[in-house]
Image (tube, rainbow, N blue to C red; front, side):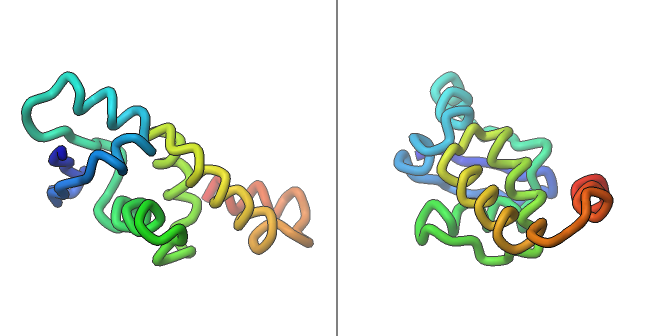
Length: 106
């Protein structure tokens, strides 16, 4: 069990199972006896990540771009693959290169 603090000041007690899914968090908590800060992840994105860990789906696909960036930071492979599949199926399918670039740069 570990306590995580998001960049907007929310705290979460997370399970060892979740730590095993997120290799970076596992390593960060292994060397820590206190609260582990996540300076690049806000509460909304972290809630999506926790929900995926527990239920295998995201709460809010409107934040998929932020979630995949956070999943990459946390080295959460299953979530990265899930987001990439969603992006390929629903976001970039049928779009021009310019539209795709705009989505990811915005």
